[in-house]
Image (cartoon, rainbow, N blue to C red):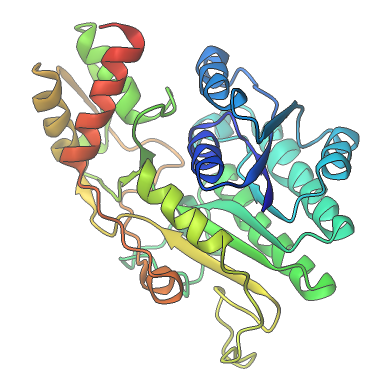
Length: 335
């Protein structure tokens, strides 16, 4: 297939593009290489893709409607995976407009381009952050998500609502994926595992929020990408069991679905750090701090809907995943 991947130089986008190319798809990567974190890492991921004959790339933002429309016109994608976004919960407290520009205006441009290009299926990144102030665990796609606690989360909920509108009005099949704390080789430097590894190796203390007592559904990158591909290959139709008198947020009478992608095995942050210490062969100096504004205490993905519809079954433990990350980190940075 011809698949356009936005955010192709990002953590998930680069790995997904690699997997799609390996199975014989043509991939058009689209990314603005912004400096939210070190662009050199994004460029290094991209370099691994550009040598492939079936990979093309355009550097531009989702907000640049003309550039996005040109990419769609040149490539004529059959399917689209939208992973480009302004990421990060804490950064949304400092720079809220970046989230509206990329995650709302940019996503509208993606929807319009898909609509006018006759795209067969749009898969897009949502986030576990949409569960916000919810306390019922595990988080299920059938739960209400009307109480976000960060603008990042609100922008992702907005994406789900916007996608449903286009599925309903224009019969554009869309699938939203709520990712749960992704980690692994080639990961994002602003994420905990990357920050902890860098500081522990430098002999610096690490900031541990909520005194390390919160739980996260840490999900290894390969398991995430497997879930993305399984949903990409399954174009949704109208849910024959959808009841408008008792509506589910996860499906519709339109060709629309929302799924969780997580490991379904939450781990306490202190245990996560303990495994990292074992892999590095060093002890961490912990600076215990309260929960940060915008963060949620615990996440736990109910992945039953994704397992039922696609056969998804995450299999990577944190012991294996963290060891692979540390091996990559030492090799990439020569430490």
